[in-house]
Image 1 (cartoon, rainbow, N blue to C red):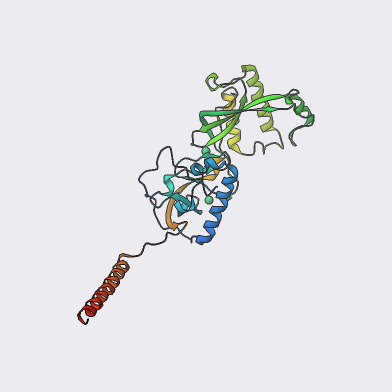
Image 2 (cartoon, protein in one colour):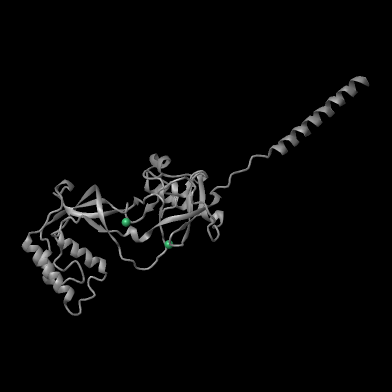
Length: 298
Ligand SMILES: [Zn+2]
Ligand SMILES: [Zn+2]
């Protein structure tokens, strides 16, 4: 997670600002350490973007306000907002895998919470696509687990091209889906024939019931998903996909202020200004008295 990604939320706000203010357990890092890390990510961003984009894309340390946030998994992390009036759930955070924004109020937890099954989510939106050219496939299988016979069936002998779509899922996360180059979302998915789907069904049932292969697919959600795809006559591209971000993004459940990333220099308090003025006035009065005394004694 880049410490410097502070894009404002463009979608649903999570409700009343500051509604999650609370005491977050643990302690903040030392200010100089936080500042050093921030400056390091700023330097990385400067490498990445041309100077003309810096004012737009790179935040300045002096504008950043530090917060400790707590997530639903129990982890606590430090985040920044643009000033003390902006709360950590007023902004959206980065999904570092797809480099898309997470829905408001979610944060990518960097802690490894162990393996979790990725839930399947429907695709709500085909956002945009990138076309990639590939050379002919190599003679040897591209995958260690695949035997030469299966590889021969799917191996592409000529250079080929695929489209990689950025999709938005029903959970609000983004992911990537591959399709044929000539496919468009308005075409809907391509289906296989009734005969072919009967064959696919038979093949999977054989694999699932075969002795020694009961462990595959490893996760039952995967098997449920394949059954669902068989019911739908094996649509390509699939109308959904398994969402990795759902296993990492966590809801922010509370936050606490730390302070400015660069401590503000305090203006002199009013009382001391008064004191200074009184001192000056006293000195002036003394000087005037001196002048008067000089005149009268002349
Ligand atoms: Zn966590
Ligand atoms: Zn998701």
